[in-house]
Length: 365
Image 1 (tube, helix red, strand yellow):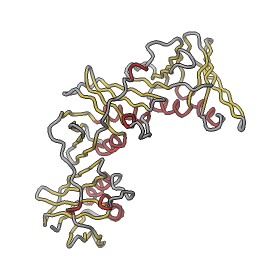
Image 2 (tube, rainbow, N blue to C red; image 1 turned 90 degrees about the horizontal axis):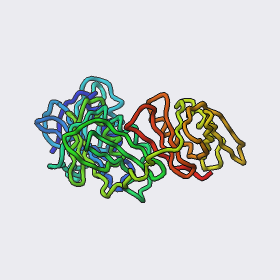
Image 3 (tube, rainbow, N blue to C red; image 1 turned 60 degrees about the vertical axis):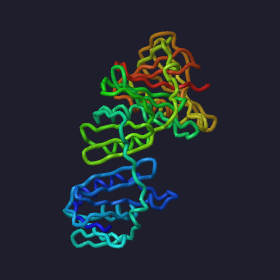
Image 4 (cartoon, rainbow, N blue to C red; image 1 turned 180 degrees about the vertical axis):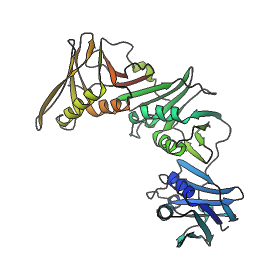
């Protein structure tokens, strides 16, 4: 059935920006490149899906005709973003969408809405309310450590655990691991592996909303705010028992300034051996850490960073990118590194923060 509706332009822009990343031009199913616009007595729905993530925005509007139409997403988004004014009118006839805004008029060729995939509802399951600020903080502290290798699907997501005294998020690619916890007691206990991409879409969807609803079904999750919902698959499988790889004690503990150490590592990476990104840390009990790198083609580099050192010190090598990723996720001016020897994992923590750690496996120097 054809549609006819007037909508506030800025609200339509927000909705289209919200679904833009889900609309893909690389899909083998052409219909997935489209956005569905559906009108009813209750308002307007703007919908997009790539079969893994589905997003639906709800908008108010003056609905003259109830129906639905689907049109190429990139065309509609590009057009609407270029418009200026207060309201926009959308009318469809024979699967052609007519767009009118002020003195601007356009027509977009669409296809029948019957061909558009149905976004499933997540019925039943466990439902919790999550504070947006807590969720975003946890995600920013761990998501960078997830794997991009599809050979081990469970590592391509973030492991979210609700139980005990709070909410914990974990991510690892088997070379480094990041764990962050918040004293956020939820109404339900659960553990679920959520794809990193889905979490990024959730972060964009919830925006500055104070809180949102998370519904966990058997193999899907749904996130709901006042104006939108997102449905995504979850990653099935058992997450590794990551606790067993975290060293329980350190023979040497080092405390340094985050910025000073980061600057030294960034510069050392320029001189790192071809392709390896290796930097070596020489930890001196007297109170310095020497950051060293060398390359037969480029040259060599060494810088000393002041440190508080407890223990025997020693030598250990890491991937510079992994070090910087972790340090960039810390929000304290200083951090600690705990190490046992050059073949055991190094454990990094923001100084004074108990519920946060970043573990990195060493490289052979």
